[in-house]
Amino acid sequence: MSSHVKDKYFIWQFSSEDEAKIRYQEYGPDNTDSAPLLFIHGYGAMIEHWNQNIPAFSHEYKIYAMDLIGFGKSQKPNVRYCLELFAAQIEAFMQLKKIDSVIIVGHSMGAASGIYFAHHKPEKVKALVLANPSGLFGNTMDGMTSVFFGLVGSPIIGEVLFSAFANPMGVSQSLMPTYYNQNKVDIRLINQFSLPLRDKGAQYSYLSPSKRPHDFRLDHLPRPSNYKGQAFLVWGAEDTALPPNKIIPEFQQLLPQAGAFLVPKASHCIHHDAHEAFNQRLAYILKSIL
Image: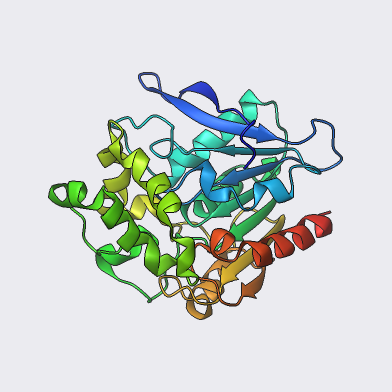
């Protein structure tokens, strides 16, 4: 992304006792006919994971992207991380920027957070663009394996193993299975994912899915959900963690209005793995949103 885009921060008071410093960036013209886009990264990621996508749309759309609490350059307090918390962050950000309705572009856990938010606040969501969303796993995985959304190589990572994971080699081994085009997992990407793991409190957010997996699932939502607006599934055809043939039907029970588009030669991190094909599909979707 353009080097002249500066990080911005806001203090989010998310409970009577707790607050966190949240990083975000904004791009594009202020006055457009379209609802703004909000990019929400997946587990372990950050704003920079969209660096192959946002620039392709920032000339035409107002765009926001933020680091979820506990990830990227956002603060990492010792709190209960869950989809509900991330959805509350989306709402707080919209209030901060005085946004009435938003198009959420989410990946993996970020997509699941968008679905959770849209279910509870359907009037605030213009459309959902969901890239390989997590939160529903069908019978493809069991136990601890399901909670790492394809971004953690080992099925069980305890606190004693956190230091072993939180280094470039561990990050590389975790990212490789999520890419079909594994040349994309270069030293720059590895360092990008490694840096937040050294932050104070990183163990709280990164280990939360293993400690409380149900906090990161969407199984409890009614099918169909309360959100009846436009929704789009975009899936990497080679995603072995969340195989589309088994997972897409689960999401279409939750969002019956959502069509699905498979991108060949792409795995879980579809937006970065096959960014040109993803951007082409996203452009088509954005033009179709009513």
